Length: 186
Image (cartoon, rainbow, N blue to C red; front, top):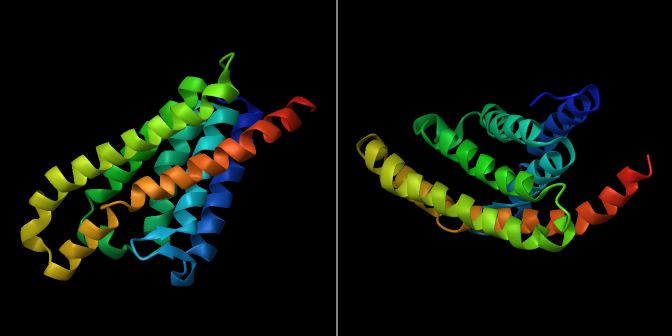
């Protein structure tokens, strides 16, 4: 699993794009609903999927790990600073999503199966993140958190990760087929 020069360049550009999205779109006015579903998170999920479909699994894993770190650094830590175990949960969830994209990429019926496989990956990402946060992170860090912090974590991982990932999947399913045709021309 090596990246060629073009894949490295595209991965770096996607990391830069992730940085710009996280830096400049992370404002409260861009929340879709009150459960923490933000345009930023939707676009990051889109970047993870497109990056994996275009550059492969290694690029997807790199993006899955770097994007949450960028968000953590830019946001000044937020609640992740008080509960650092959430960061690896987010990374693992992202990796699960990109594994579903990688599984289908390049297959004969890729465009037909893409929505189904990615929706399955989104649901699996949500279930794994929810399981980890509610059965490991919250019980482990419960004593060191205030009630407000605890409720914030519960609300953030209640349904938001599923919706943001599904919106990202929807955008990827709309954008990838014409993008793939455009890429083939060059």
